[in-house]
Length: 471
Image (cartoon, one colour):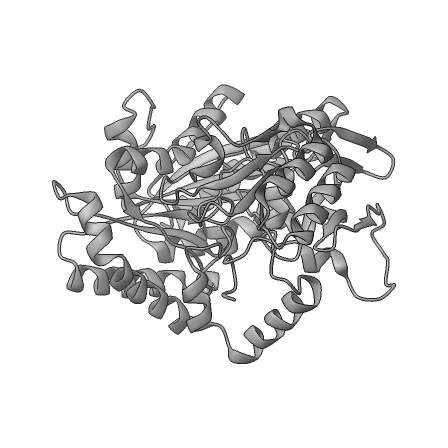
């Protein structure tokens, strides 16, 4: 590899100020969980789609691997370079323009580097809603959201990132630009290329722009926290809420007792309005009529849940501030876990009906094989996605526990997931962390098809090498 020639070509493409090779590059080389630290040959920060294409062509010509990165908030090691010092890190953060809002068509076209929260705010300024919402929304970018097919807290009503995207702009492995920025909701002209690139984690092409779906802002939102004795009750409450609230039910988050204990330990300033219970559910309803209508439906549904003994107590937010405080409890769980120490994370999904059986079986297996291990279980019960995380025993060395037991814990959890018809990755992606697990658990036919697509679109294997699929 002619490093000098490559750096000259990259500087010519994006400007010398945006090709970084010296100094502290940890903002790009260290992943959010601090599990993966790589070494980039250079960090390149293009400002346009044309510059991205020029960077790709330069890297392809010299056979250099290219790692795309948005906000670097991923959890599976999919957006940082390896330690070889031979991969170029392509940061899209400078590409942060809102290109167009078409209110009549309920669409917005944005650069891939737009921060999710900025997209939400731009939609709200027009009286509209972009409903994708997740804890990292102040840092993550739309390109990363689409590359991983992010989920979040409103999948129950609006779907994953895939369902919120109508069109893409993508730079291919050959450095060509595919302009698929269509705002059409119906377009059956051949294969759906958009869906091919969404969720591919930068291994098939680099997303540089997207046309997103917008929705009218709801007239009112009502949020409540409910205490429950079991996950069976939580599933029954979900069925009741869906029957009574219909599509107005936009959030249904479950939180185990220990998850909230960690929040109380590390963030004691956050109020928890209900007495401790084995499980808590955070519900949210969006209504197109009025606050009074929404609250009436919500209160009636919760009264029925109390009568049926599905819940033991409930608290309904009386203001936007109280609603935010309830959501802050849920969103603080991962932060509290990080404060507690390194942990073994799982982003799994199983059919909603199987969640109680999955948790009972996995809990028992973990307790039997890893005495004292603590289970931090929370997530999006409404769409069957749990963050089933395992913390080291109280007082134990978290790093030692992770190093010695991660593979065995994963085996227990993933075996149980598969036994219940589930998936080892619901919304975080595969990246480097789960690549070998995917190889073991995906069917040979599926892997063969995936590799055929990879060879067709990236024959040199230069786009995000070593992620999702092995060579």
